[in-house]
Length: 197
Image (cartoon, rainbow, N blue to C red; front, side, top):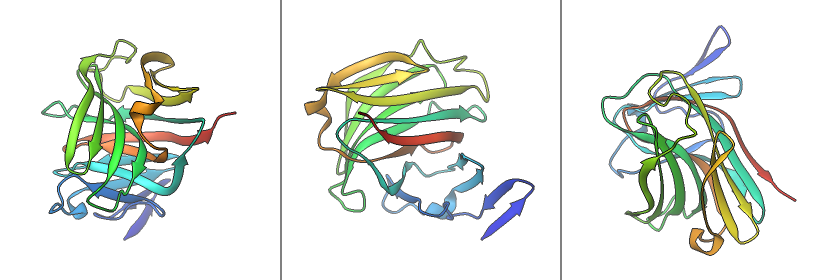
């Protein structure tokens, strides 16, 4: 069900905006446990008990590219839950899913991890993300960006580089999208996937 109240498009449980798909971490979880709302170029996630990735199949980050979005945590979560971007998405609708994800959380820390099937592995374990603006503040916006440059992949928070890794370690090019863990209220705006020269 879609309903417009003012300028906000409210989506019923399990209804993602047109063109978006979800892949939840727990295969037995139901998307109808989460709520979403859409306003202009912003999408709000009220994830409840579900954690996963959200993507549009056409958003492929290949060769030289930038993937970015601005994230605002709308209210503090009881536990330290994370959100951010993913790249190199392959087989996202299969048991052999693979992607690399770049996360932040409300205590002002970042992590970079990879998923291969049901297995996740930290590439950068949780550490301070000094460029985050008032990470413990509510509704503070932080922009995450992943950029390929030659044989490297660069990770930025608010235009400050926080990590670089060899492109070969990232894996094949693929779909880019968003990752939002459970029990979060997060607004994402200006999500873009663009080719670089």
